[in-house]
Amino acid sequence: MNSVETHNLTVIYDKKPAIWNIDFTLPAGKIIGIMGPNGSGKSTLLKAIMDIVEPNMGYVKLMDKPLDDVRDKVSYVPQRLSVDWDFPASVYDVVAMGRYAKRGMFKKLSSDDKKRIDESLEMVNMSAFQNRQISQLSGGQQQRVFLARALAQDADIYLMDEPFVGVDAATEQAIITLLKNMRDQGKTLLVVHHDLHTAQDYFEHMVLLNTRLVAEGPTEEIFNEKILTETYGGTLTTLSKVANVLKEKDFPMRHK
Image (cartoon, rainbow, N blue to C red):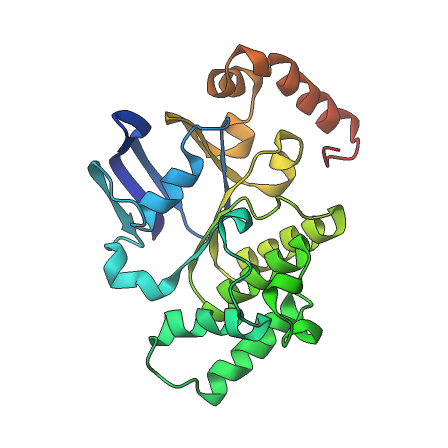
């Protein structure tokens, strides 16, 4: 089964295309990186897939069905910086939203729901913070709460917008380990990412965007200087060479 299909997907803001004629079919059970320069449409692509923004043209299928038919099986993790963290809610309340997404807002949480919430908090090492107000958390802790909410939903496809932004190296490694464990359980993860130095380690499949689709396929096939330069423009030439050298020399891959 395919995970996500887009056909001629186009979103236009103020008469300027944010994404243009995006057409791909992504495999299931993979960690898939979505990469491109700032303003290339990465976040817009996720929002169009989730119908948060309405496409001007084209359509999306998830698991070979329209989104409305499988909405409870798809989880969206927005950028942390796009959220109002002053909203008066506890860590537990936020994670519980994942169960409401699965069951419906007006159904009482069952004992199984509460067990799943507890398990999700434990998986991201946030059980001790479950009664803490989300505004009192660090950036890395807030990101872990977002991931716990997604885990609580127990979806099949996860769309994650920059989950590594604003977290320290230890948290980033904990998150990618969690994502790989989810992948091993058959989940599909689409992850917007910006760091070329870690891309080859994190993703087995990639989508490279610059408003239009530049390339899509296994990382080992498309993560090369020619395609990266086409994606990012001539200014990337040096960066892509650095990424290749780092990979070949086995230097630490986290960009400081």
